[in-house]
Length: 470
Figure 1 (cartoon, rainbow, N blue to C red):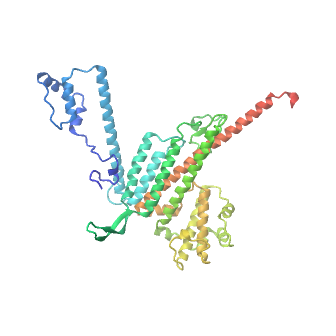
Figure 2: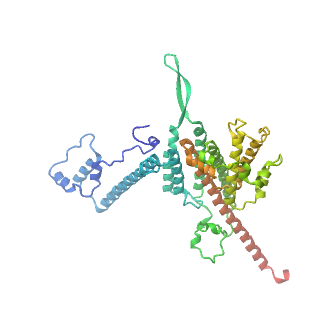
Figure 3: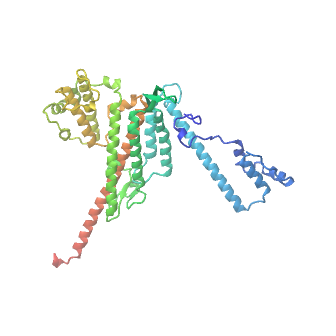
């Protein structure tokens, strides 16, 4: 770690600078600081040559004293530039103070009393990434580029939070050759395998999502605020559900979007959908590697049958052919609340069956267990089917909230690397899902506008016909 910063990651960026304003700069920013005295001194004697290494601010003030007075216009321009420098300096001071505050909360575990009763570092960093996402993207409900201020905040703070991963390493033996030809066994460091594999992929997904938003700078559609529209307005081509009345509504021309814009929207929707699936897959993999908290194990039902219920258990345990889609169709889930309840019950039963199967089988990775290699063990088969049902459920409800197990793992996790990867993939998954939803809204408005335009054109054609032609 470099000596210019007390926080990891600052040595790679522009924060490694002295933000304490020198006294001579403070004095040079004043309006009347010693100006009359310097003028009297300049009129009585020529100014001495400035010594080597002297501050430029003193040299500038001395030269200004011997020069004739500037015009009012030139004075205003000078003061404007001086004020601009002061504002930039103040902005840098504010940013530095903000970063100090955020890192202080991380070190204190969000416990400002300093008594050590705060959350662990992993949870604090996870909350910091989640809160940063809510601050930057929480008010974004439109397909448009991020403002420069929000983009700067996101890049700056995410760079600092992700830089922690640079110091999470694993040791491996390595043979080092010495100059005299001899060899020695040493322990070399390398990035941890899960970070080395997932972090570059997540950074690439983030870049792709931000590029999608940046591409909507000039579009054929626009947005209106529902709260500013009259209730009698019937010309809108998009009608949002009442439970999301505060969100802006997309508007398109009366004839609909151009074919080029429609194709671009569809391509970007497909791209964002693929990013969403990749981020969700990474997030699921990281959560599966986290340890199951003891508090969750103590709350598990006595048997998997009690957890899922009699009807679901009979469907899962009968027959050799099991279809998660058919089971979900049978359940006929109508809301995300019902889907989350089923997900919690199925996940709890899955861990009951896994615990029972682990008494007779040694399983290193449960994701590799399928019905084909279950060796006829009923618990292994049921656990595999429960996992398939969970995956199918999350695909049907992509905006499904975290299950009780996922929430418990995040809350009790102490691995900082896993906390960063999980929260990073989770916020990217949320952003990708939102972009897909926003594009769907525009496409729905475009489809309604095109239908309305076709109906109007047909009505005009029929109106041109004479009564004899009917």
